[in-house]
Each structure stands twice: as C-alpha cells, then as structure tokens.
Image (cartoon, rainbow, N blue to C red; front, side, top):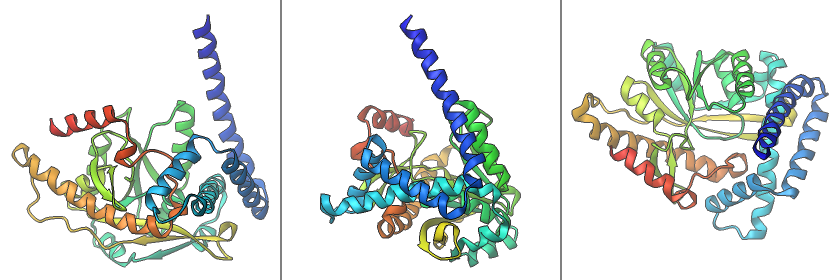
Length: 333
C-alpha cells in the first residue's frame, strides 16, 4: 500500500539522518582543522547556491533586520550567514575532542563580571540567548569557566538523534532537560535556580510553545519565549540578555573566536507577584522583561546579522494566522 511505502521511506530517512550525524561526529574531528573548515565553507557555498526553504527563510529574516539593503546588497550577507551556520556545525562536530585550553582560546567574554559576582555569591543567573554564532561552544566554556550549566533543548525526531544531541551536550559539561516528553522543564529549572549557583542559558528568540510573548524586534513585531523572564521572576535569579558573534582570530578554531557579550541584568521587581490573583501582573512583568531582553538581542542581531542562524519564522507578519489565534486564546485563558 502507498501509505506503507511512505512509512518505510520515512523510516529509512530517519535511519540515514542518525547515521549521518554519527559519521560526522566520528569523522569530522579526525580531519586536520584547516581542511575541516574549508570543507564546511564549501558545503555552505553549495547550500547557498542551491537555495531551498531554509536559505529562503534566512534571506527573509535578514531582509527584515536590514531593510536598508537592496536585494543585491543582501545576497553577500545571506551567503555569509550560511557560512556562519555551517561553521557552527563544523565546531559542534569537533567540540567533544577539543581540550579545555583550546576551547578557552576560542572564546572572548565581554561584560561577564556581574555574572561571575552573582554566581560567586551563591545566586543563580538566567541567560536570554538567541540563535547566534555557537551556543554549544558557549555552554562548554561556561560549564567550566563560570558555573554548572542547566538548559533545555527541543526534542528532535527521530528519538535516536535527540539522544545523540543530549549526549553530545552532556559531554561538554551541561545538564540537558527536554522541552517536552518528560517532567516539567520549567519546574526543574526553577529547582535548579532556587538551589543557587546555577547558570541557566535558554534560547529564546523563537517561540516553540505558541504561548510566548509578542515583542518589538528591530522595529518589527516578533514572538519570543517567555521562559527566561518567567523563571527569573519566579525565582529572583538575575536575568542577563546574551549576544554572540564570531570575530577573526588566529588562535580560535578555524581562525575565528566566539565573542560572548553579557548585557546588564534586566531588573527583576521586588515583591514579585505570586498566586492566582497576581497572574495578570506576572504576565505583564514577564512581557516587559522579555521586551528588555529583545532590545539587547536586537542590537546584536543588527550589528552581526550573519551570525544569526534563524531559519524559522519569528516575525509576526510571517507566522501562520491560525497559530497566532491559538496563541492569543491560550494567553488569554
């Protein structure tokens, strides 16, 4: 039957995906570093020329961020964005074999003094991240150089691929919680933050739950995750927006260094709302804090657009109307 053939084809595709990632993790790290990065640059250039849905979405998002660029002027930025994205993958496949010293040589932190002070005093820090540059390198560096990292990851299909990514990030020193399919990720994060001394970076520039917050991003309406602000509000943890970008550096992997910039903490109001009676106030404060994070993120995205690896819809004008209506109903309930 045709549906059985379709199911068999999908099963083959999933097995091939898992096998491909396993091969990449075992093989790319064995290549000489210059060759590995040249190979991924070549793959990026072919990907850019072929186009496709992901490249088209990247182009659309970049056009929203940089409206002053003509269509012709935008193309070098899109090509650079695809190269930056493939650089992320090259680094991800090589990260488990890099020494701590090599990882440190590939990172430069800016504005991290308040974060270090908060952690040293026993407090917890929630970081509001975007899909910028390499968040896995940042997690590996932070787990050793700042504090134990606890974070959430989207559950991928097939399950074997998700398990591979969890194992990969755990080898880098991070504690990984699934966003769905297990116990409440938010409650587990709340427990970690309340215990103190926890660093909780959360990718939040895309709303995966359809219950996020609508914000202004680079002058356009977008939807972002409410989790980081809600967690800081619920626990009193410091909330720091974090941006990242690559800079040329001879000692960094592939000739690049990751710059991690911690923006000043977003104020968490004293006497935070609690209980059902204050639910509306809590939602309003969460929205305001998320907007403050979006402002910091927008500055980084505008300055280093090519390092924003956003190949999904985030701007309201691009989202499916039925999804938006469902989101509004859930937010109102």
